Length: 246
Image (cartoon, rainbow, N blue to C red; front, side, top):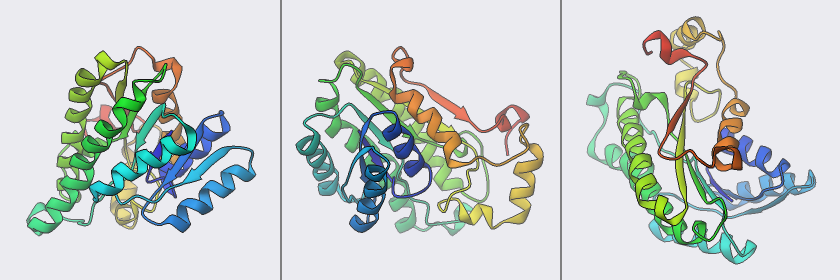
């Protein structure tokens, strides 16, 4: 199982959980040393893991990631796409063409391309599955991470399209859309005291999510209990979305 963006945050939490449940995991992020460090910790805990660096914005590295995983384990049963980019915090007028292209390429095109590279291998599995980590930002407008939200809305549509294309090959495609999670990736939002106060006060569960909260949903999406689920985006936001947005 490949998990992108898994040297920290949601991806790492998912990798640790899945390894504890007997899955062999491929830890992937931009830095090989970071990947190896997490993989080593998982092995120390009795799990099976290897590290393979991959910059999701570089297409040749996407192909190398799939090849390394299949060469090492001889198969590929699941792909979790958690890695993403969001270089801009603020209104969309602050987003120039270069930043826009980075967000859309890394969050949408690279996810599509990596899924297609993995599909032939996933089709050989008894439970081939793709799980994307989206965001509730893809369902609501906001002035802080609006272009990131656009990319996640596109990613949600990608889930539906890939479910149609991959279904005949026996491969399921789904996503989880978290709310605000306490990770390094979300630090710009977490540094905004007003934003944090708002999320805590309006989320029905009255707290922010931890990476482990989302890891459990990912484990469900790639596991046998969701074998009749495809083309779906599951919202995991502590109930925030039922209040009307953020």
